[in-house]
Image (cartoon, rainbow, N blue to C red; front, side, top):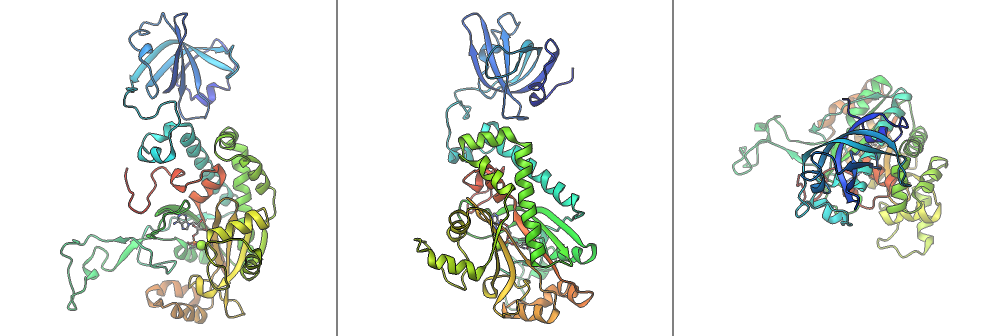
Length: 464
Ligand code: 4AD
Ligand code: MG
């Protein structure tokens, strides 16, 4: 007999049909009349299926009456109309096979509320809760929507390398990849670690961004995007930073900063629309339990025009705001999360795109503006999160690129291949990176980024 997913069974109305489902028990209630109700969830939907287990089942005493939260079962039975209000259909069991009981004395996920902090300690079991099942489904939908969005627009999916010798952001926040013995590394004549002896014959790291590689393909195939894991060894313990996170990085040839901002805006709106259309039950759950107003907020963003302003204008607004910020505001410093949120939540009440940041606070590859002090960069800020997208038009003029790198203390000889893009057939081009976990936070209302990725990697934490 073909097993069916519960989300499909819940839509069926062919009462009398024989159906087999499998999943994990959420609850069991015994009626005085000698039968039991068993709620089964298989993760295919937020909703569970109610099974009626009759006292006459051969294993009723031995198995059914022992069923507790977390037990794994396969049930075959007859689909019947539910008399109860909570669900349209239920399953009258003819056969219940228990694959594994879950001892209620020790199984940590019981019906009562558990804190997110506690669930992080049992991250291998937390997908069995309503919240983490819903997060996983929304995350899945957003990944699929991402591919659909870019494929519909003729972007080519590029797999950028994960091990790299280059520091794309020039921030020095890289995890080293090495097979040298840390206790006795080979040394050169000067007594320093001889990386030439290492696996790749040079220092290598986990990538912080696939952008530089994406640029090489955009400068041949016009428009590409990456979607892969990226790594940052920054010691940030905040609710929006991970050491390992996924990033989507589109890159377009023959495009400038305005094209880049247009693409980012279309993409974020598309993601909101897609999630609203494809995950209504999960979003309703988040709206009710996690962030009241979430659905209305996503509807608003899906239909909004993002407000665009320059960094210089943003700083002027923040300086005049008179709000009590923890970090000072002033031209020449990066916007902090509190400033970003003030702009998108309080000042404009919708997503905001800030453009043209100071050269000194941004990466070497961004295109210098004619004013001599800003670059053609943009950040997309959304309510609840702040920065969700960072992007720029890239410096396509070789001399200017070399000068920018020099001024940032970077040796572009190491990036000779990157400079070659400007030597041969250089072209204006632009792209951005969207942090996938911040996106999942935005679409679910989950407060902490550690709760929107299966196994979070943060400073001092790599369990599982
Ligand atoms: O602004 P970032 O550092 O930009 C880049 O990496 C560029 N190379 C992107 C490009 O132009 N192709 O990072 C892009 C986005 C941020 O806006 C943020 O959403 C996310 O990546 N991000 C993080 N997400 C979680 N944890 C971290 N530590 C993150 N750092 C950046
Ligand atoms: Mg950024």
